[in-house]
Amino acid sequence: MNNNNFQSVDSGIAHKPSKPTLWTKLSYGFGAAAFGIKNNGFDYFLLLFYSQVVGLDARLVGIAITAALVIDAISDPIVGYWSDNLRSRWGRRHPFMYAAAVPVSLSYFFLWSPPLDWSQMELFWYLLIMAVFIRMGITLYETPSTALVPELTDDYVQRSSLLSFRYYFGWTGGNTMSVLMFLFLFPAFVTASITDGRFNADSYSLYGKIASVLIFISIIVSSLGTHSQIPNLKAPPPKRELTLGAIIKEIADTLADRSFFSLFFAALLGAIGTGLSAALTFYFWTYFWGFSSIQTGLITMGTFLAAFIGLFLAPIVTNTIGKKRGAMIVGLVAFIGSPLPMALELLGVLPESKDFTFWFVFITGVIDTGLIICFQILVASMMADLVDQSELKTGRRSEGVFFAASTFIRKATQGIGLMLASMLLYLADFQQGADTTQVAAESIDRLVMLYIPAILFIWLTMIAVISTYRLDRKQHEENLRKLKAINTEKISN
Image (cartoon, rainbow, N blue to C red; front, side, top):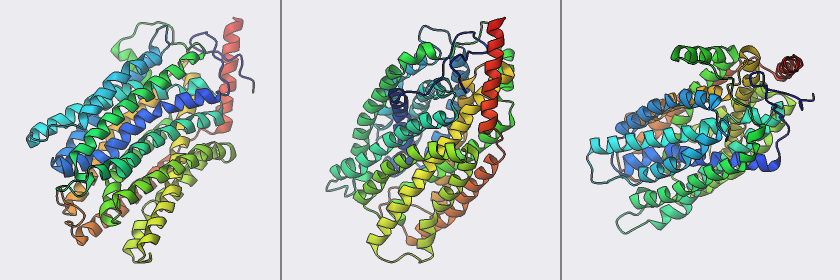
């Protein structure tokens, strides 16, 4: 299909989607490192740091992070709709992207340097305020940036390819900080009084400084790298009188689609599962498997290999079996396999050799994480395809609204997963500040036995919900054909 003459239904300004260049893919994808670094810190280190190192009650940590997520979630539809309709010489998206760089970087730095002598409630409010600032700043960048995908290309496979680069850099950026922590920072902050650097607040303070600089670089490089694409992107819809009621009606009309609701509720379940899994991953590596800081660092390095698996696999799956079927098959294998090593260890199936156990966890983890990344790319690409279907129905391009709705539900509910993790820790009777020698084996096993059925129920229900998504490649290409016909008629008139 030749789309060289494709024009926006609502703007009348030429829009020429084509195969994005490698530079466009790299610069666009690199911006996800900022989100990856932030997410990695929140998902994997924040609960451990504030509860086990700072000494804030784990339940208060969970409440603070969940409250910040809910507050921030309100900003998603606002930023999404605003970026769909913004008029500026830098287009609809880039002003938001540039504006986010400094606030996100500064607030992330302060998050990891809390006053250690404050009371429980003072620390609670400090964590809550910093988390709100960071998350709202990331929304200002991430929602408009992600919304660029359907504008940069309308090709069914190329959207998955473009998102593959984004997810690759997102996972790689976050994982780089994990490797840095476990292989360098934690070992460097072992002292006579603190024999494990994972429980030294100074290591997290230095982490915050490094991460904040990298977040700033990621946002600026990606914004500048995609700046040249602004003339080729969609223009905002014509000016019209907008009231609160009219805005709400437009958003409701945009999102009134069965396939959207399939992805919406799948994102809800996925966010809960991700929050639960991520918050406890390092607990399992540290307490259940008994891995050292160096071993944990090596396992996290495996994510670099996993990111390559997702990068190359997602476009192949898209082109061969389609996004929906691919997401369901890949997702089933990935999510059933995720807790399998722990289940085998509990059942006494694995050999007693610690070397075998380490490499078994390492290899299965690389494969499983690679499949999860592929699954995430496919689902995000499915969301991008809904933009064209919505334009056909409403006459408006609403990339920001669609991706904001997805991030809205993810943010509003991911904290629930973290709260579940906090509750499981409480039920397992984990002591605050305890090192690997101070937690009873019964508590560790109880935590794993509670976790496995909970996470499997969440993941498998999510796959069932995705099965109700309807838009396939044939329908997507038919939508593009109809849009082109509408615009051709509009031009001729």
